[in-house]
Image (cartoon, rainbow, N blue to C red):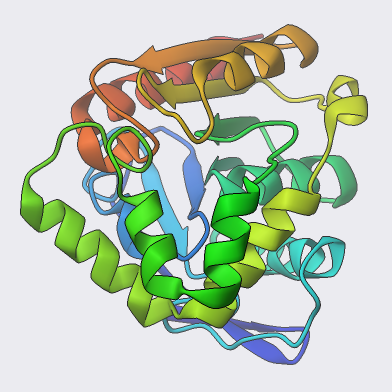
Amino acid sequence: MERVTHHGRETTYRASGRGGEGPTVCFVHGSGGTKGVWKAQARSDRFRAVALDLSGHGDSDDVDTPAGPETLDAYADDVVAVAEATGATVLCGSSLGGAVALRVALDRDCALTGLVLAATGAKLGVTPELLDALATDFDRAIDHLHEPDRLFHDVPPEYLELSRAGMRECGREVTARDFRTCHAFDARDRLDEVNVPSLAVVGEHDALTPPAYHEYLADRIDDCECTVIDDAAHLAMLERPAGFNAALSRFLTEDSDSP
């Protein structure tokens, strides 16, 4: 595990894989998550993988910001610092991580050659039921997220328990801040400003950020394709890693072959 210091705090990340001639991809997790969600991507021999813990998650220092644009900006700073330290030129963000990746692409001076928007959207409204549970009953919020076709479609029970434990370790305060930040996010009127090749990738059964969200991204970002991962829900990179990695590798190969 490595660290980069920026804005008075340390952000942790893990780099893995040589990746041959492929680019370095910086992976950004979602709400209540950590870099561990990308463990199947870290083993790829098609690209070098760098996965970070956003501020307040995993082993990274936290920030004292209100939920919303201020937190999103802080997370974007984390990503830029890691990308610059590792030479990453492709961002792959899941859910909240997709919003962070979009913020970097739109508002930061970061040399990008590609953008992967996984299980995310241009607007990420959160249901009142989940927001209330996050504020009043964290166990109920965790149960809500682990109902079928939210985080997962069909996985062994041990996957569910590991996911639940990881969210509890992240804690209610940070997880609730993440989801409130998602709820405030809306980049619908700025998608035409994205100027790098992009991929919108989603699990077939994702009820949190359904395929229609990704079709919307593909329609409104100038150079963007949409790919659906069969038999998966929100965390397709964990549930169907082979399909997810194949889609990502195709995108990176096509991007590198572009004039």
